[in-house]
Amino acid sequence: MEDKKELEMNKLRREVRRLKKNNETLRIANEQVIHTQEYIQKNLEKQIFYTNQLLRSTSDIIILTDKELNIIMESGGMQNIDESYNEAIHKSGGKLDSVLKLIVNDEDRKRILEAGKRALKGEKVSPLIVSVNEGSKETEWRAGIRTMESANGIVGISIIMVEVTDLLDAVEKAKDADKAKSNFLANMSHEIRTPMNAITGMSEFIIRDSKDEAAVKNAKMIKAASKSLLSIINDILDFSKIESGKLEIIKNKFYPASLLNDIITMMLVKLQDSNVELKLDIDPDIPALLNGDEDRIKQILINLLGNAVKFTKKGFIKLKVTFEEETDDRGFLIMSVFDTGIGIKEEDISKIFDDFTRVDTRRNRNEEGTGLGLAIAKNLAELMGGDLTVKSTYGKGSTFTVKVEVDVLDSEPMGELTNREKEREEEAYRPAITAKGASILVVDDNEMNLEVTEGILEPYGMEIVCVSSGREAIEKFKNQKFDLIFMDHMMPVMDGEEAMRHIRNLPGGKDAVIIVLTANAISGVGEEYKKMGFQEFLSKPIYPKNMDAIMREFLPPDKIQIQ
Ligand code: ADP
Image (cartoon, rainbow, N blue to C red):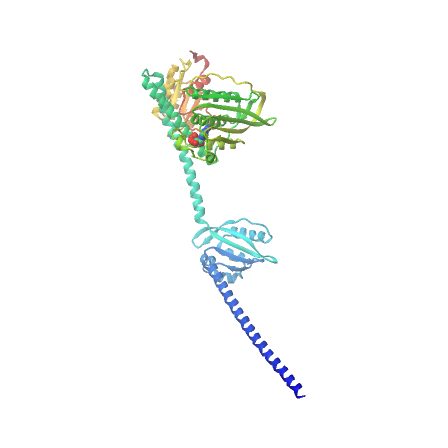
């Protein structure tokens, strides 16, 4: 009995010990829970503190709203803008609409709200540019609107507004600077072309009139140099137009045979004294009459062939032209220029179409160029619905292939090309006609230009009257009728257009032949001058050959004597 009791007691003692131990474990666990809670609480406070700091210190405007567009949280950017904001937000009951009224105008407020509502429907909204009223000044802000989503879906929106006034200003300034650059280039080209007229004209006289061989040789060099300077100016002008998106493709009907003949003749002249042979592979089945921008196609070909001549010292240059039909009345003219020249390194190939880029300059340092030609050619080809590609092996040669889209006007095959012999451009030009008995009035405010034009006209043996202003031209016309009037466009006081209009209103003026002289090299300008009321235009510098074409077309036939 005693033993049983003792056993019972021991059991109880053990139970008490176990309970005590459990109790201790519970106490420790409880302490740990309290610790953890304290830790979480502290961290939460820290988190809230930092979030608040972040919101307070940012100068951006950050607004978080619920699904009803009630503001849940906002950044200090708002307080910076309106000090009475805190009070106002209280009064407004924290409605986004009323708060926006404080900072943006009515229209922008509606735009933001509308975008917010669209975002809440799950639509993606693009950032808005809005004006914020900061007391006395107005600033521009970019407002990005996004939805906030939890596991249960959209719970509200966030609006983050960043000030972009300076950025927009900078963009505006960059645009202005770009415009100024284009204007500068256009003006500069105009200004340069005018004195160039004098240079080419004067050298032309020396070549024609001088008996001194050395002087003639020098004059030819001046003429060649001014020609290449003119082509650089044209490149820069084209390039600035491509950059500003102002370059237009002007389609007209053209005969591919005649275009190719001109190009081939030019090449034969260029390669006359070189060891490089010109090979041709021209498909006779190219349609006879096409519609496209002949001048621009010529410009690309001249550039590619010009490069081939520059970079090929021996072997041959081949021009291959084919036609790829797309539909009955449209297709691609495909022109390839092969050369056995220096070739282009593989790593340079991708660079050659970049603006102002020339490669392998150590080897090419003696060659003239701006590095603009291929950039322009590629852009032109693309504007004409095609492209320009290149394949090259360094040391062996290159192939440039240009593709342009054209309309077919006459699908008859153009046939085999015959190489018409043309007179060399470098030779002085002697007109094959005279026009004794004809009279001509030349109007230009620049003395030098008057002299050049007079000099070019002199061999025709006609009466030449020169005046230096629109007003004088009108006075002269009142007393004498002329067979032809050359009128400079840009003149101070009264420009050529105004003078032409005055003359048109005088007796006999309606049918007077008035040709405008212009340094404006922009293509398509001819049509504009015709619309103004001029019969034709002649671009400066004046080449005697172009002048001769005008003489033949516009002088009365009975006053022309064939030599
Ligand atoms: P430019 O000839 O005025 O320098 P381009 O834009 O026409 O400018 O040509 C850019 C560069 O591409 C040239 O300077 C030359 O390095 C390279 N290149 C062009 N055509 C050829 C060619 N046929 N053979 C070798 N290199 C060429």
